[in-house]
Image (cartoon, rainbow, N blue to C red):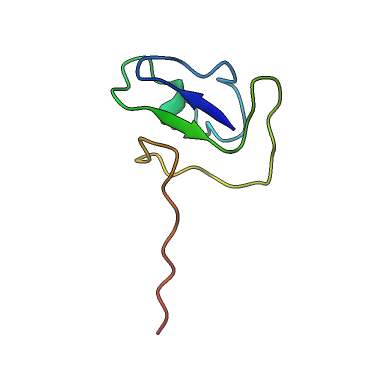
Length: 68
């Protein structure tokens, strides 16, 4: 897991979770919150094909599935 303090830019700016470019809050220099990335550690990206929600400012948002 990678934990980025406010204002710290992720070292993996071109990872598959930052698609479209700049959609991951971990890559934003002006971010005011701590960002946690479970898809990376300091040296490697763990890819599982998930797309990040562009509104996720903390890296901790999870989808809510409603049942009918």
